[in-house]
Image (cartoon, rainbow over all chains, first blue to last red; front, side, top):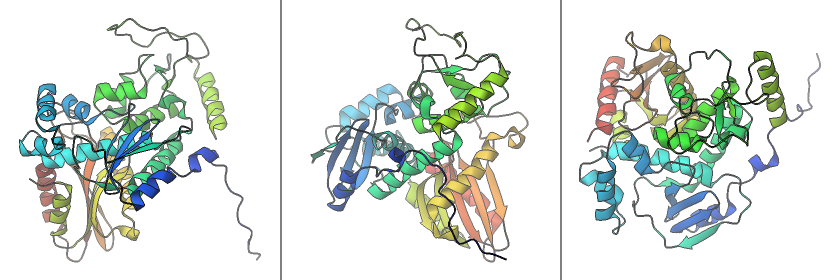
Length: 275
Length: 132
């Protein structure tokens, strides 16, 4: 019996972009135990003695949104905490010490938000990054995370999304529901996302209104896209008036698929192109 | 008031505890870990346990008769138990007042572990972790 000694050819993977190092600058800053803020195209990452203490991105809901949407705190309570403890850079501590938020709850919520924003901050970017030494965030440290962990997690998250559905188009475009298909029952958390899809909201908009980390929404959106239940809205989608609650707008073929066979073919094509 | 680390340390005091983690089941992120992990890798363990937790949490088969969702008064699933020849895994979902998908994962040696006790204690820890 012969033994195969040549290695299998490499399977086609995502483009070189996905494989590049997250940020060489960040590695250096961690090594020198720097304190300050890393400013990148999609947000900022706060370091304290070389560890990540906070991250924020316009694409990711802030801690205030996450806490107030669930009702753990009202916006008045949040403002009061920022007014009282913001100048002393210890809003996180104040929220816990004043009994507004349990320490465990704050740690879970903030750590989740940190990794969520960091995913976007450390996304592929062509713009140069900057670092402001000495800058600190007014929340104060809550649960510092090593830089290497944050970087590894950002890469793992990219791979996770890619494995669910390889086309990233639905990550930042306005979304529409695929009309004409009988919608099979979807899990409750996906249903909440689906209920927010209206032809002009993006994943970030949906996350803000649900008070949910955007990466969580991206996971559900990729699953819904894989199931053929949502797609990106055409770029000429009409803009609804402010406050106008719109259900799925009707779009001309081929962007609204009414024939399941055509939908399947389009999804196959998109998937092949995205490989 | 316990934070993530205190909660994990407390879990490790249970008889037979080998390792514990707080994991987010949507992303597979380990928010905190302590002790050992099967295969020595907490991050892989978290990602794999998250897959199992997600299936249990999402499928209606495992939800109570009257139904419930993550925003309501109760969780659709309280805990999951996996046993093998030498260890137990207990996954306990954590109910939070903000939108989340978090569970506690406790890994127990079968020779010293007390599954009933671990299940009760983990439930108490999950409650204390998020209550002010």
